[in-house]
Length: 404
Image 1 (cartoon, rainbow, N blue to C red):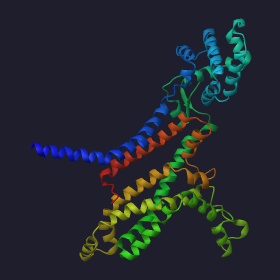
Image 2: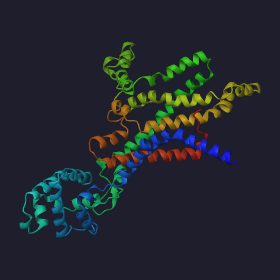
Image 3: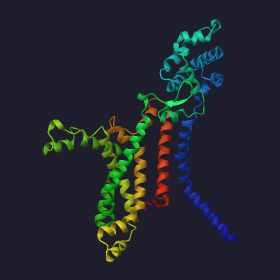
Image 4: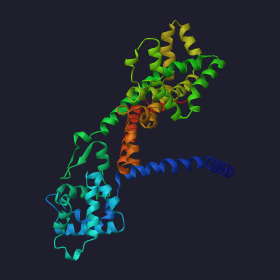
């Protein structure tokens, strides 16, 4: 018995050693970045680190009226420190994310105070207000109090087109700035549409692959996998060539007389172009899981149903189709999740009306440098996917999803 336990232990150690590299890869390149992203969406200690005394002083301020003289003095000293260590630009950028138009006043105030003799200052409130009128307004102080809180929901509120007002209450953002909820809804319905079209196109192809002779099936499988051998950027650029007004499809329609040259159809740089290009890209991800399940379904079941009197359509819908639903579920989930987070194709062929929310995640990472908001938008996408997957599992059962 002792030898048996030892042998089992050795087997478990050997098995763990085999999966350890993959496990380490997942932890380092998936779990840790995901955790860092979610952490950034709710934790931002930059302002509280750069203005520690001001942040502490503002905790007791009730957002009514203006802070007292001591708070103004504390802020002035710390703005001088940030100007001297050249962090004033970063501080101003972070404050500007919460209070639009505050970047230049914060930077100029810090640089001007740096060159002043504070011993001659009688009133810091008057001095800061003379430098820029923004320091005499409650908005900047309320915004400064908000960004000085290390743990915050302001990024998630911004991602849902909400914000803290000057009194600290949660209110909708100005109507002209409400873009993220609209983009999220657009992303979800477009992804669902892509999933539906891919299912309608992919199911017959998968059925033909599963029921064809091996020689025909192998040739069709090569055609299905062929897009994977071409770079995604090249495939997307090819759709631009095909769909643009002077492109191949419009030229063919004009050539055969269905359109005249003045009425060419705009099929790219809009949502139509995004749907077409992404459906083409996602089609193999729908076909392969369905095909893998269909390959495991014995053909005797349908023949038995027909021998018992069922017509071919009835035999298909009552016997064959239910057995393929696990593959259909896997393909739908895979296509839907991939579509929600897609960036390159909508960015290139979507124009203004065909963009997904992923574009703004990239924008805030690369351009505005508002990583907290980018992380919150990504978090909202993740939560949306998890919520939809939970609904799917409750309705259909996650255990029924199969890829082979």
